[in-house]
Length: 451
Ligand SMILES: NC(=O)c1ccc[n+]([C@@H]2O[C@H](COP(=O)([O-])OP(=O)(O)OC[C@H]3O[C@@H](n4cnc5c(N)ncnc54)[C@H](O)[C@@H]3O)[C@@H](O)[C@H]2O)c1
Image (cartoon, rainbow, N blue to C red; front, side):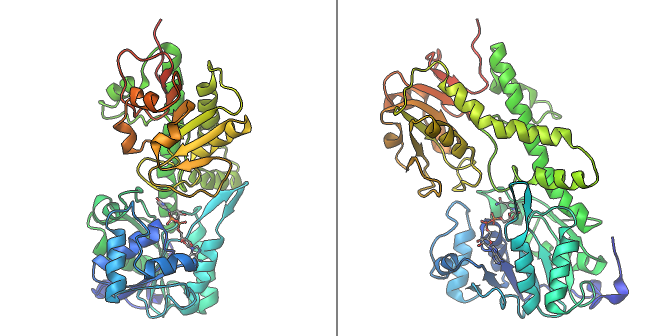
């Protein structure tokens, strides 16, 4: 770690006060959660986002994060009482703030890492932040981004020196969508790193106000950046393994779900669940950040790459398996249950359901997707409904793609009763109640038939 204590603005160990006012850049699921946690801790919050319509919605007291318990409530209360100011004036939002938390998106598209939002937020923060402020990046980024990109932009636009005139930290957001605030405040230790010791101490002190489970101090910004990516890679590789072992079980006449449950009763086994693919803004993206960095030092991360390949090809394999042994004709109706990438959230980013839709639309089937939480979709070419009866009406093929809790209340017979008589049903998330014996047209991913 680059530690240069003699240069810092003040000795952090002698300063016991928390921030009086903070700003959060990015009013997404992550930024809104951070803002909510600070509001609940009694701190004044400036919440900044370039999306004017989102700012207006939050400002007017609209419920924007319905599937995140506690977040809307805290924002609405803060806006009403004046402790939360929501703004699209990102060039001004950091002014007067003791802490600035950046939670804008990062991404990976067509072989390129996208960090434009981090760059532009850093420029804006730098143009208005005060001397002595802590700037903490929470966006998941390739190792080295905080030091090389964030610091460079902050110094350039502020004219100040990181570690000397202001503090810099990296602290990955580790929330699980659907319980984000609880995760941040209660569930997990907050991983914290700093550009120097004073920054680390400042960040640790600030974060310990909102994160009750405590702090894990990392030795460098890069170690903290990498930690977050490894969490995602672990899950991606594990899901790829589960997808593969589920295929083995099918071919061997076994039930993966039964085998998994018994295997996981041993404390060293953590087999994940198979499914129609991997989605969300995080897990399909993070492996590429590490693969990209490994490529630069000519290291081939074969297993990580293979897991990506396995999971990326999963929707097409699930779709093809669902279509096999059917006599569906172009124009026939296919119902997909779930557009969200995961159960009980309204997030459809990189959802494998879209790949399922594309597969069937390309074959000229009439596709209807049901989702209880998502009512709009950017991609077109299919119908989206929140009525399960409407989605299943006339469907000759049904695929359960998302593990929404409401599907757990349904049995295969319930679904069949709403679909076209004799329809084929593939439960790719193992959620539907299974009758015994199963109808031969009803399948669960990872479950083979014996004999
Ligand atoms: N969603 C998760 O569960 C999760 C979990 C852990 C980490 N993360 C990380 O956090 C990042 C943000 O996640 P999210 O789900 O909140 O994303 P999001 O896309 O829902 O929200 C990001 C917000 O940032 C705003 N924004 C973009 N550029 C900006 C700028 N220059 N200044 C101010 N606002 C700007 C966008 O308008 C958007 O509202 C992810 O990219 C990921 O790196 C996400």
